[in-house]
Length: 270
Image (cartoon, rainbow, N blue to C red; front, side):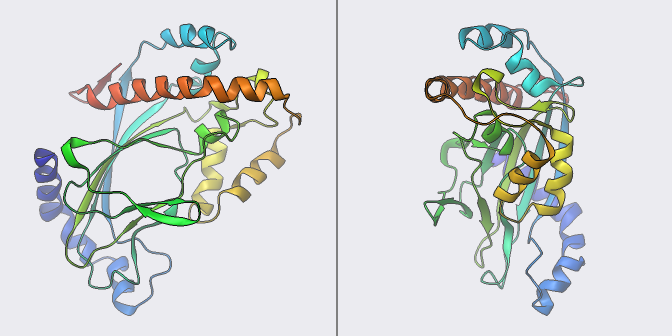
């Protein structure tokens, strides 16, 4: 963690800090106009993949799903995307009026955030209340799921609303790796689970770009209205989903975690 912090902080001081304080975001904060800004400085790194996704077929078979369901759920024609967002949340003299990152749910699949080990700030909405996650001690990596996992699980696993708070007395950082479906991947649970609609990830991202900081329920309703399907899920199939999807999800976590941790010279080995 210390090595990560040193690299991020050094890059921020040398390349990003000046532009942040000269940006429109800083000007809006100084003028007190803060409803649509985030007090963060970030950059994104995309990874190339070498994958043994043929193993997904074994996983699908074990779950009594169509043999290529898990593979097709994320691969599409061009393969899933894996990227890392590196974000710095500087000290803020007005933490009561601006967020480091406004309330939102993530659009994609599986997210693995490595948080600052000294400064807290990440909060999740649980049962109507904001719960603060502690600093990430001992190189702890959290696991979060995005909107596509909510759809794949037929709503069993919700994509959590979260935010990053600013601090007056300390700056924080986040290194989050995102494992997302291909843009042309068709997002839907197994047909045996009879989810009522499906759509492409690329179409969803177009909607998400304009509604990221709004409630997500209207986003899903909009996508449902764009697509066709059938309603009514048999009780026993809901039970199958409830009992088997945790294993399904953990396996995806395992693949995503290995991708995030085994990176070498810009390539991620699975």
